[in-house]
Length: 120
Image: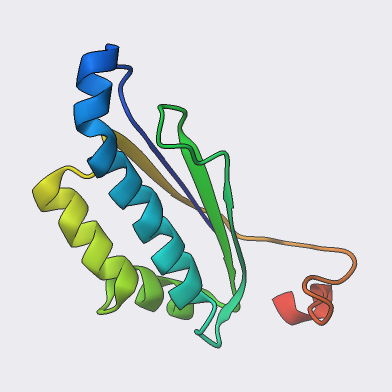
């Protein structure tokens, strides 16, 4: 599982207005990455929480079949890699965090067809 956060510094209204295109661009590209992940066979689930361009930090999560597919999607060529490169060169957010975790057990179904047996 991968968890990411991104956020923006609080700004006075006149500076916030000027910064809005950067924030809106970031949010739009989060959705592009999420949509791209949905096309990858190794991606089991993905979501975005509390992502608002006005200042609160947003969080994404993605659940993967295995470490290899997660790392390939995140760091090799593709939509996510393009956005990482943009972040590094254009500073598309003021702060970010990236965390990987291993799910050890689940119960029930995810998206109607995935259960804990798939984690082994």
